[in-house]
Length: 334
Ligand code: SP5
Ligand code: ZN
Image 1 (spheres, rainbow, N blue to C red):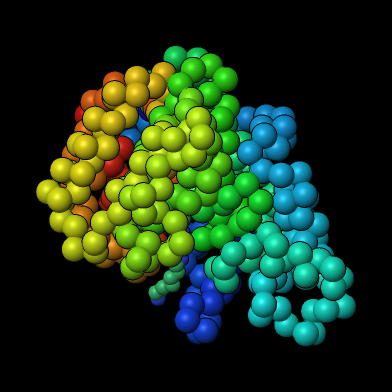
Image 2: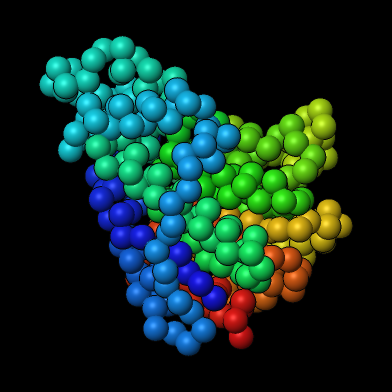
């Protein structure tokens, strides 16, 4: 299996997020992806390669031009600082024109997703990573793993949030949709609100998400069962909101239901938003899943027998994230 990875993500190092009015160390650390890569590199059957370049128009088909250029421009103004909405420090007013600060509220919906000079380049490279993986799958590879960071599934068409700027999985799915029907399975702990929004009106891309109920966890405003799609897209959006007590066997039951819906759709391609924050020891998310269960989770997805792009989303326990990734990837190669 090919693993697509670029070290450009290392330059994106958000320092803080604000939770309940408290400043905390940001959970999306560069170490997350470094640990996954280190755990997988050198294993037989795996090959790590660099992303290729694709036209920026692939990003513009999913995100508005204003939004994309805002991330680039606000980052340039911010320089080495990480700029937040609402909590923007007065001392920085001289480096960021007031109109840009005002727009920060338009383009962001939380206090978790700061922008600095490195953010645009890292987010763009994450998109190139998911597109490169998709291009291999389009040319006939069975499964490719895009080691994307920053993550993407919370990024809406015009708003960043939940550590996400560009929606890597949605851009990959839209790219593949020019060649056939695409299903997206989102198994991150959090609802993929951005991906849902982007495809809400479409019947050629099915979105299926298993996640903690938005009544309990981020993003709070999206991910309930009643959200089924709109217009042409009606019944092509499917949410499985769960309580926090979900065990391996509970999850497996739901996953089988989700996979049944996907195989009924008869997709040509599958994009999986992969989150390891469903693990019992995750500091941000956390159902009650064990490391060894990820092998069975992956096998179940593999057995759908659909050409598959795996796109990395969350997973925040750096001391076990490598082991989880090994367990998961083994489900596709063993
Ligand atoms: C891609 C992804 O998984 N984004 C998740 C964003 C959710 N952020 C919620 C933040 C919760 C506050 N942090 C708690 C850290 C515990 N010390
Ligand atoms: Zn998550």
